[in-house]
Length: 279
Ligand code: C2E
Ligand code: MG
Ligand code: MG
Ligand code: MG
Image 1 (tube, rainbow, N blue to C red):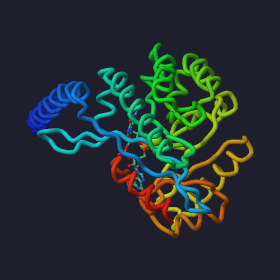
Image 2 (cartoon, protein in one colour):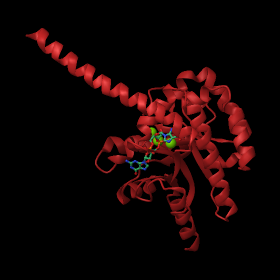
Image 3 (tube, rainbow, N blue to C red):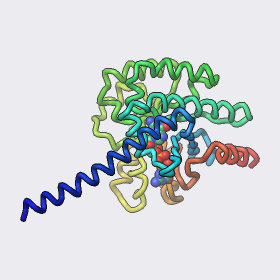
Image 4 (spheres, helix red, strand yellow):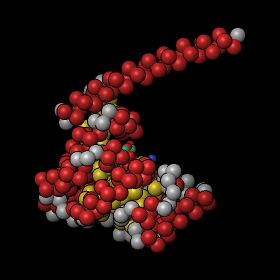
């Protein structure tokens, strides 16, 4: 009986595995095409000053509308792009597009402090990363101080390789932010070794801030830690006025989240900027 059950489960499992692998292969091929044919869009989520409510900058976020499967979440296609190393050409395109858009907004008279771009650990480990960033800045005429690169704590695992790269980017004048801060598994000791500018408080801590004393304690501590280390702090995933009020009361300077705006297409983001300039 037990054996039969096990067998049954095994069959079910392979079928699921099959479907999973088929979709993965389809997505992988689709991704290759999408990168070649400019099928991946960049969306922009405003980064906002907590006190003034002004837009300080934007975070660039990749969006893929698959011709057959429809909209695919970055949480699915970014890991796939990483596995296949397609993240290197894809990441370069996103960086170029985001910097171009930033410069266009600046040329149109908008005053934005920064454009933030996510770089995966795989890109970061690629020997061409520094020259790629240099070339993008040169092509788009974006001053290095206006580019912020977002890294996750996974970078810490390869710190012997990552640290020299971070130092070179830092020396160029680029800003470095640690994304999803507090969700990684690394020790805090790297905070003093890495040339960081900003900590991004992960949205999991923000989400239940109003009901969970422990989340408040974590958020308070990250804000204080950033302050003591001379780093900036930005809260991610702020969805309600209550959450925003709390952050304001704790002296958190900046935030991103649906309470202000979802990630927007470049047309929508431009419209929002024009509207806020007119006010
Ligand atoms: P992330 O860099 O931490 O980006 C923040 C994510 O939170 C985005 O999800 C954003 O849409 C979402 N978000 C923003 N405000 C709110 C909110 O108020 N509530 C909730 N529930 N979510 C909010 P998205 O765009 O789906 O991206 C997911 C992750 O995929 C990103 O997390 C990042 O790690 C990765 N990713 C996205 N674009 C890129 C890219 O161009 N390159 C790389 N390497 N990774 C990317
Ligand atoms: Mg990010
Ligand atoms: Mg994040
Ligand atoms: Mg994330």
